[in-house]
Length: 114
Length: 113
Image 1 (cartoon, each protein chain N blue to C red):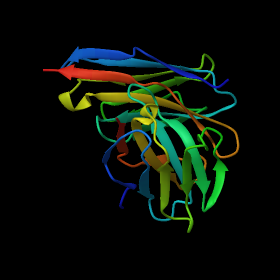
Image 2 (image 1 turned 60 degrees about the vertical axis):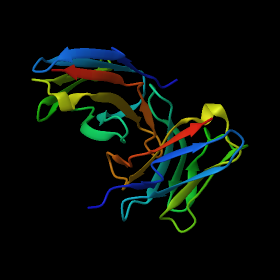
Image 3 (image 1 turned 120 degrees about the vertical axis):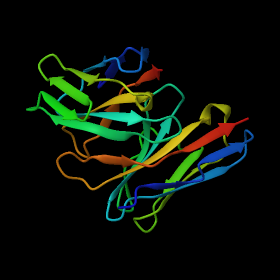
Image 4 (image 1 turned 120 degrees about the horizontal axis):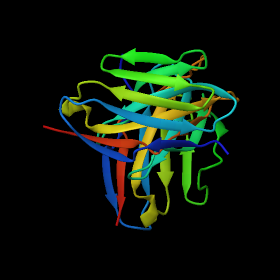
């Protein structure tokens, strides 16, 4: 079974530029998550989708971050404009639901903002 | 406020030695607790998941324990290997809609030859 795919794996941009990340969840997983993980910390949830609807985006900085999952499968996360403090690993995860609701994580995209 | 605290923040041990990582949480009501291993440059990978009724679960050389009364969990690694060098993250799920997860800050383990 293929895992969660993310691209690009690494991205370096200058502050005030825009950047987009892509995620392809495990086939059949209705729930998709985007996390931000700053070096040395645990992941922080940015947004959760159930199919193509948003379940929780309370911690998404909506003035600069946006995410979409138009067809309920792939998702993109965009930052516009980027700030220095956005340097982090952006993790995508998906889950099937159920009692454990186990989340499977992708390898992440490491963003460096200069 | 739901919180998950892990200790120590970092740990260095010699190959072949055992070690124990700690996790304390305040998530309530509690659904389940997971331990993830995260290699440098990779995403977290699940090691164990335990519900309220389970107090120990093993996955090879990894053994997790859970005391739901004191809200504490531990991850014991036996006969460490160089490949165990990674961050270990404790994650707790509460019994709310969507089973939102609360992540600990992780313990960074380095195993030296």
